[in-house]
Amino acid sequence: MPKSTQYQSRESDKNGLIAWSEEENQIWSELYARQISLVEERACQEYLDGLSLLKLSEDRIPQLPDINRVLIDKTGWQTAEVPALINFGEFFRLLANKQFPVATFIRTREEFDYLQEPDIFHEVFGHCPLLTNPAFAHFTHTYGKLGLAASKEDRVYLARLYWFTVEFGLVRAKGGDGDLKIYGGGILSSPGETLYALDSDIPVRKPLTAIDALRTPYRIDIMQPLYYILPEFDHLFELAETDIMALVQKAKKLGLFSPLFPPKEKKAS
Ligand SMILES: [Fe+2]
Image (cartoon, rainbow, N blue to C red; front, top):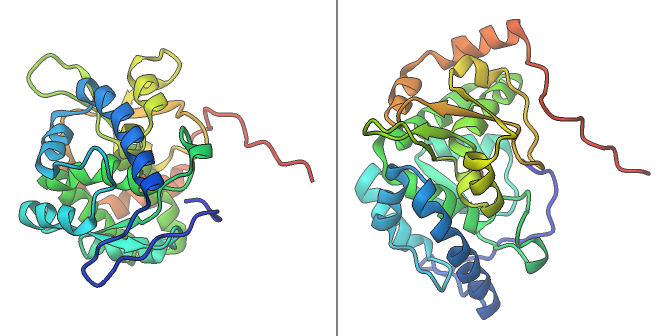
């Protein structure tokens, strides 16, 4: 999670609606148009099913109450309108209550291709479709409850598991062809990484094990050097039923893997 931001969330009216400006809606429609054609071939079926259930608007920023109606019906989840930055405690508390935090701002044109803060395009386009899916919803809920009860130190380990699943996970498609597909919202809301994650021969791609993900360092400001692959989407159910906190303790004993990325450059002072 970034520590500072130039963005400020918009506030909704008493009906939960936000009066987005024409420019903000225009940015959404350009982001949507660019991304939709990429994900149709590359996202997992469970994501695409969720996308058709949500019927997101192409030309204006969706209103959260419209998304909530679908999510509540399918999995009992809903979105929660939050400021541009929230702390880990609040993040876990919301997930533990089946509320997915959505910061209600959209990126500026200067950051059209890349931004570190999760904006409403990332949250709604990247994550909300899969919140209609029972396996994903159950895993995310379990993760929230574990995180809420965890120590500060253990939360850092949990964050790695989230990163390599919910944010940057790949999955083997059902049906025998074994094609790699994307389910991580960090990838699905980024055109560059949607292509890179599946097509580039630069990143390492390995089968997911929870213990490995817990031990793998990551950086939020680069294309990922490593992706973990779920054997099938419903494996998220099994993952949620694993004793994840026991694995966190094991990961702490074993220590982190060496990073596959260079250290972050220090800004000249
Ligand atoms: Fe995210």
